[in-house]
Amino acid sequence: MKRRTAREKALQALFQIDVSDIAVNEAIEHALDEEKTDPFFEQLVHGVLEHQDQLDEMISKHLVNWKLDRIANVDRAILRLAAYEMAYAEDIPVNVSMNEAIELAKRFGDDKATKFVNGVLSNIKSDIEQS
Image 1 (tube, rainbow, N blue to C red):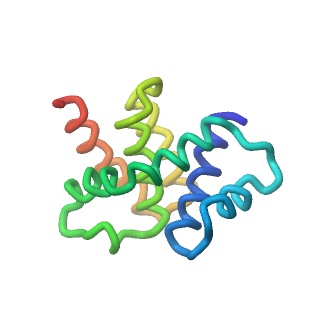
Image 2: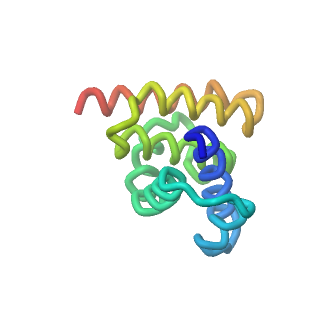
Image 3: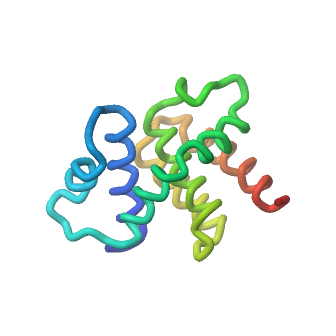
C-alpha cells in the first residue's frame, strides 16, 4: 500500500472512530475494505489514538477563535493525523506531512479546509522547529 493510500485509509478510520461509537478494529476493517493491512496505516491509526490528547493540545493551541470540537470532523481528523506525523514520525519530513495533509484537505474537506489546515499546521511546524 502506498503511503498516500495509507494516509487516506487512516483518515477514514480515524474519522469513523471520532464521529461514531465504532470500535477501533472495526473502523480499521471498514477503512481497509478487504484490502490487506499495512504497517504504516496501522502506525498512523494507533499512533494518533495513543497520542490524541497531546495532539489535540498541539492543535488547540493554534486555533484562533475556534475550539477543537467546533471544527469540521474531517478537518480535525486531518489535523490529528498530520500533527502525529510531524511530532512522532521522525522518518517523515515535516513538509511532507504538511503537504500530504493539504492534499487530504483538498480531497475530503470543503473549500476553506485547505487554507485552514495549512495555517494550523504551519504554526505547529514553527513550534516543532523551535523545540
